Image 1 (cartoon, rainbow, N blue to C red):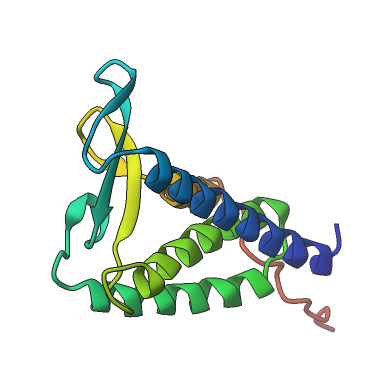
Image 2 (cartoon, rainbow, N blue to C red):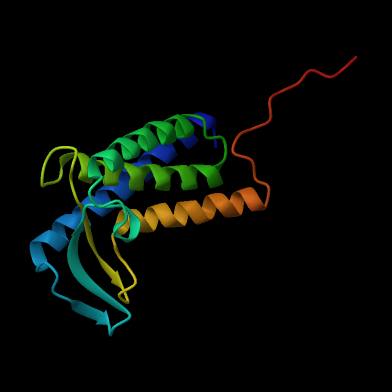
Length: 166
């Protein structure tokens, strides 16, 4: 696959994650009552609508605007990475990270209670350990993928072409 096609694939994948996350959040807000559990697998997994003003596990509550700025910077950084992708494996990782990051940035920037101080819609309750959403799945899977690719030695970019030494 050409580099251009990989870049396009990366952005299309990001867009897919954004759509999945935002549509699922819309459905959660439409059909779930705030805080009311809807067990799917007993106590192991349930749907439960909550609004998270903080980061993972509710950390950083009260600093939502700082998390918004950080999310914006992360989106810019991941966009730069997406434009430089050279391998399909990394396109999958970066596209998933970018999609999850953009969706969370959107929530923080534009979702209530006020501009740049928004709350993330979470609705997937994992046995009471934490409540997340589809963007979280994309971000965690991409982070695991990045670690695995790095550990097995698959570089992000192609090595620079060097002229042979004479």
